Image (spheres, rainbow, N blue to C red):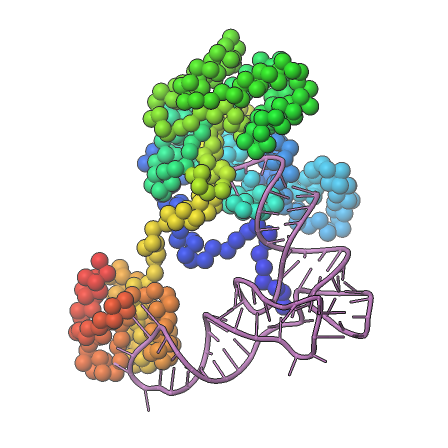
Length: 457
RNA sequence: GUAGCCAUAGCUCAGUUGGUUAGAGUAUCAGAUUGUGAUUCUGAGGGUCGUGGGUUCGAGCCCCAUUGGCUACCCCA
């Protein structure tokens, strides 16, 4: 006997959980579809080479790799041995692993666009809702298998796409009752310009990583770490000024303009942010120049959604503009922008805030009692008729004590039971009992469906 | 990958400075009740105390290792 268990960081979803998850997915899907996005699904696994190098060094480590089949075949044992040696040295070997579980939905999408560019009509708008896998150590709000909902537009440089994506976030969160979720935006070009202003464009990554941690470790530690990365006092000072920018969105914009003026990269970024700010309601988004985001491929606008402050949960969504993603697959000139919803974290947040509707269920409406061999034949016939009338129903499969059948109905929250016993059989009648009220009526068998239809409206 | 906390019945947990036969609640099953469910009462099953070693006359309890879970770091949805 083996102990039943599932891999670390994965979960089973009981029916009540599935219903709530579907509630979230349906709300998001509705918004995607009414905004003109088409569905796409891609395989759970991709070629390893498709994924590696796209998410930074840390990201690469978190990709779940799939062991090749047939490694034990003696004919390939030399290949397997040299391949494994490469693995031990920290390199990848196609002879050992050539496929991996998808890490996000954006790279597979870019791969899809590159593969199908000839048949797609641009601007191509797609949404995708599928699980992704990361070999991260699980903890609160972090799973090894989780679901992302992405919407992306490729083949359009227009900033109207950015504006639209803000509205998608807002509409979806409003639909879910997560009105307190905050959408934060920034632009990667400003971070690049900051590095340039510091005279250290090569340190862009170090600078962004450091300032991204401001909230967590505090200003002093950030500046300290910048100094350790080789920035001199003057450069650290520039970063400090950058980080000290506060106020309303427009105040922040004025101050960033002053700080980074004359740098073309910065002016482009500021212009882009302005475009968005002028076209979405003031309270929809918050500018945050500290926002960096980990994924390497972003080049313009970046988004991040934070859970309501009352819940200890980090990011529940994020995204951004990427100019060169399909270039990695040999297709240039297709710019894209997209966002992602973290369904599992949204679920956790909604659960703690008690935001799920209480009547979320697809529970059975009617249970037909099984009162014996002859009676159950009649009951089943009625049951099928009720089902065909669009009312969910089932016959209790075994002719056990009524007590037990009542308890079953009660546990499954089935509101109505229909009893057809020997007496009803001869009278051509049925007993319908409403378990919530305890009321029951006896009626002619041919009135059953219309009665139930009235009741379950 | 690093660190801390935890592991006892299907589930939630007690279990005294180490002491002889490991408990409760809940759930399950059966009966009280031959055609009417939420209560009540009675009874039953269910554990090699995560696993392996060690200390001891004696270990659920102490020590070591290992596996799994949770939390935090790194990073992220």
